[in-house]
Every structure is written in structure tokens, then in C-alpha cells.
Figure 1 (cartoon, one colour):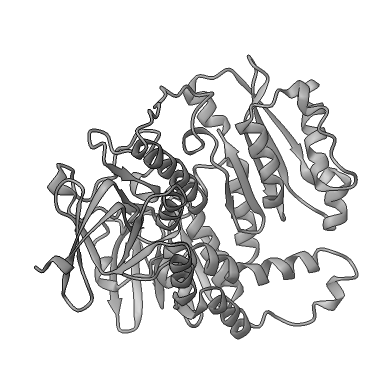
Figure 2 (tube, helix red, strand yellow):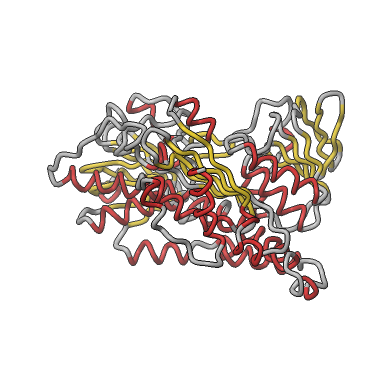
Length: 474
């Protein structure tokens, strides 16, 4: 290997998705040099196979539903959704799976980019194999940040890998709607994709192993999404245990109990697994395939030069949380490079980082589910004294203006000892836009006594805050 094949940077970042991009950007802004290593598309999962294309698929359906919910406007909705135009709009948000724009941003930010497959090769060392097979050895003066993300997990169902199931990647990038789509998993991906492809013409069957959809959310959320899916003609089956899969010609056949279900495609949406296999973690004493165990600066425990940021640590597998962690990790890397002490606190339930206790999340179904902080079940499990306050969103004037017959629910989990919000969940049309206020209240631990003075504008759906407070007061 020639000397030209050896390069040194302050920080080497594995993975140029949104998390890796943010790590590199912040450390470069802090005066350090950085290189991003990426084997696929710069911008990562969110840009090309997750957030952006999935929400583009869903937005047309949402807009039509909103129009149909307003008397007068409903009369203008005289046709069906243009599937080809919806898919074309989806493609525009992925730049037709071309990352030239993202590459331009990286170069403009003063970050180097190296295409290829990266693997750790001992302390502070990364070997990159390029598309042409050549190798480049990278040395990191201060840190290596692993931002390789996660991949769809395929459950251990007999024959399932052999039928070449869709993962979220195929579900968000498909060029046409399958005639019959079988969906395994009733979490946010399974629910969103069931809504999307049902609206675009597929006959959808959703199979959930448990007894409710969105099991990590408040029960009212799963109930509302279940009712809406069934109302739209999706065949939702709870307590459905898929035991086998096979191909019969062009059909996929799933065995569910004593029944066989047939479809043209099957989407597996049952969870994620860490992308830590094949990247050399074993050369530094870690186990391939396992999530990286990190502290609250995202430093891998026992390896002060290695950071695990975003999905790869398994804390909160959401794009905005990966970016949040990237900012935390990069700030720590820059500070340590300057010789500064970075305190790693023993976080309590009330001072925890957002990826522990105050993660905002939206499920873009109809109704939407927007939540932050603890659910009532999580508060109960944590042993925190609390009270649950609930109010129908449709009862506020702003909601009745937004949609005729607006149906939705607001749920607040209140710490009764300190009288602050532990968590908030909204279920209803367009409730995602209510979430940031809730996030600020939860993260800021704003006392209920102060929230009384945060007066909601009338008539907006935000009036729900006043109604929750009045219900709390009793």
C-alpha cells in the first residue's frame, strides 16, 4: 500500500446519512478536519427510503381527507388520487435516488467524502475498500464516529427470507402499487405503509402479532388507527402469528394459524437491527450485530475514541434523534480535542437527555399520532406518581373549524408530585403541528402553574392546551 493510500483526519465518520452528515458538519465548524465514508447514497435512509419518500406517498391521501372533511370544499373533490403523479412527486423528493445535491452540500461544508465500504481495523483506524477494490487506510487523531444506522429485521419465520420480502426500502421506492400487499407488523412503518398503498390502489392485509396496533403508544392511538384502517378497507388482523412463508408462482403465501393468505408482495415491518456486522467492530473488542453501548455523550463505553451515534446505538431510531445525538457527540468530540473536560452526568428521570425521556415522534397515519415523553404505561413502570388527563380535541372551536366532525384525543401524563408534564399524546388530523409546544413543555419541565399563562390563540386547535389544564384542575 503506497503512502498515497494513507490519510489522517481529526475525525473519521462511518456513514453519510443525516446523522453522519451532522457529526461531520459540527466538528468541522469546531475547527477539526473530517471525512465521511459512504458506500451507497449520501443523505442516507431518511432521504431516499424512509422519512421523505414515505411522507410524500402519504401526503396526497391526507390532503384529500382534509378537503373531504370540510363541507363546501368536499364538493370540489370529484376524482380519485392520481397515483402516477403521487409517485412522481415521491421521486422528486428523493431526487430520483441521485445524491449529487447532497454531495455538493458536503463539499461546500468543507468535509471530505470517500466512497466505499468501511471497516474498523484497530484503534482509531478505518480501512475503506473503494468501488474499484482499492484500499485506503484512514487514521483518526481524535475520534471515529460510527453512524452506520440500522437495517430492517426479518423475523425468524420459516421460508420468509426466501420469498424476497419487501423491507421499508422497497415499500417506499416501489414504482407501482402491488395488487395485493401483505404487511407483517403493526408499528409505525406497517401502519403508515398500509395507509399509503391502500390509498394508491393495493388491497392490503395488515398482520399484527400482538393485540393492538402501535403497541408503544397510548392505547387510544392504536385503537383510532385500527378503526380508520378498517374503515378504509384494510384487512387488519390482530393476534396474527405468521408461521411460514413460501412462493407459489408469482404469489407470496403466508401461513397464519390454520389459514393461508396470498398476496403479490409482502412487507416486513417488525423492527430494526444494528448495522454493526461487517464493519470491523470485533477488531476493537465489540460484538458484530449488537447495538453499541454508549454514554450520554455517545462515546462507546470503554473506548474513549469511538462514538456510536444514531440508530446504531439503539436508543431512539428516528432521524431527528440521530441528528440530535450527532450534535451532542460532535460537541463532545470538539471539546475533548481542545483538552476540555466533558462531564457525563448520572442522568435522573427528570434531567435525562431527550433520547431517554423526551423523544418527539409522529405516526403519519389518518388520524396522526404525535407524542413526546412518557406514556401512562411508562410512567407507571417507572414508579413515578402521576395522573392521566384526557380531553376530546374535537370539542375545541379550532378543531371544529378545521374539519366537520373532527375526532381526536389529547392525553397528558402529569407528575403529581412536581406538577409538570411527563408526556403528551395527540391523536387526530394534523396534530403533528401541536407537538413542538408539547416537546418544549416536557423538556423544559414547565410547571402547570406557568402553563396557565401560555394563552392559546383563538380559534386554533391549540386551545386544547387550555382544556387539558382545566381538566387537570377539575
